[in-house]
Image (cartoon, rainbow, N blue to C red; front, side, top):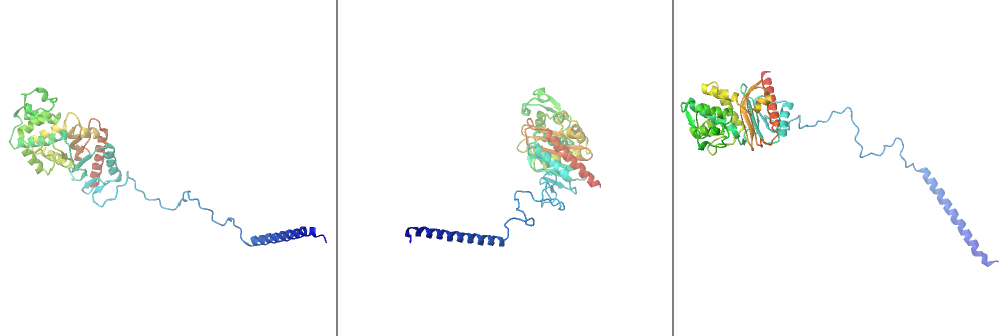
Length: 345
């Protein structure tokens, strides 16, 4: 027996057995795979969802309800308030377009604003920040001239009484009276004319020196005005609502006496700065006021509706975009016309 060849024979036998075992394992694996389902998607299976894709549109669904700040007022629990800032007194319900135009105009103006408008026939009013007091500039002068005229009608003075311009009346000296020089004399009628038509500051101080402050403050109180009092300063802050009350009294007073008619005629013919008239191109009795802190006007508008209108604002007249003021005037006018039309329907 050849003993050295025996290990090779054993190794060959082991290799053969291992190969046979491996072949059997492979057969078993193939058999198992044929019995299990495929692991790929079929046409009936749902595809993978694309989480970044927009959802499909339901063409039968109702469109979503959205709120536009330009066309719809915000919800409010307070009756008579629209767009959060417009307060209506009366039966008038403004359209979305009219209310939106006013809010947009105030927003684009970009300065604190108070306004009050009241229809002199129906009493319907529109107010925005109407009780906030603003620096008056020259609008306060018409309030005081109203008081002077009432004093004249009460025989406390005469339109023909002479007043003398003194150093106590001096402010800037650039008005018609200031240019006359100290010692110049003129009648109360002439002083009132300068104060209303050309907003003369020295003339305003002359009237206060002649008629005082206490009686004026009592008149303002009788009109229900809590602002615009002269007790502390000759330039008291006044609210749009209170200034409008003065204008309503001026309108009533025009048919009560010759003095009242004279005052109203002067207000119909102010010589400059009539913002309402320029914006609306209608007849307006007005008095405006402006400086580096305020830009204001009040008056009676004779358009499709006759109404008192006051707009007060805190801005520097010399640098502000005052064209936006006219947009507010036109927006209020549109609402007043709309309110008048609804009252007649």
